[in-house]
Length: 125
Image 1 (spheres, rainbow, N blue to C red):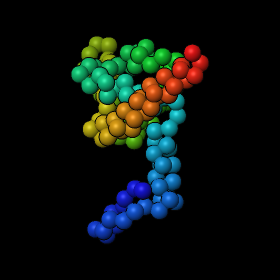
Image 2: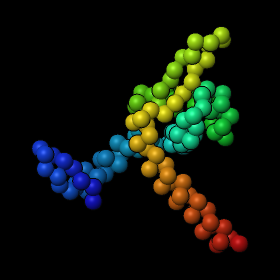
Image 3: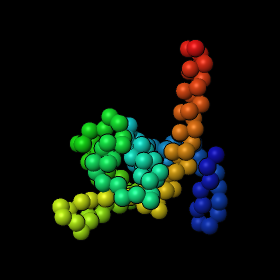
Image 4: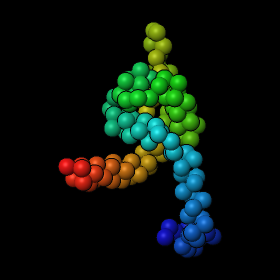
């Protein structure tokens, strides 16, 4: 069970508290694209990532959906949007330090997905 610190004392979270926390997490990170966007940006912290690069790099995402998801990720302090002083003006996106706290979640999902894919291949093949 998860731990909660309340009035300086640590205790186990109740099942209800854990379910609320999971719902909160899914409200911020849920959907098809947000975790993929975060993973893409986390894997490229040494690069300047602009909108078109993101759109090309994440297969299947539309410009409209990417724009919506980026706004929500920025609103939740997981990414930054920086207007560059260039002609024409360009905008770059980067994962924040807080956004990097999601890395263990994406790492677990990637590893599980790789194992699951292998299991399914073994069943089919």
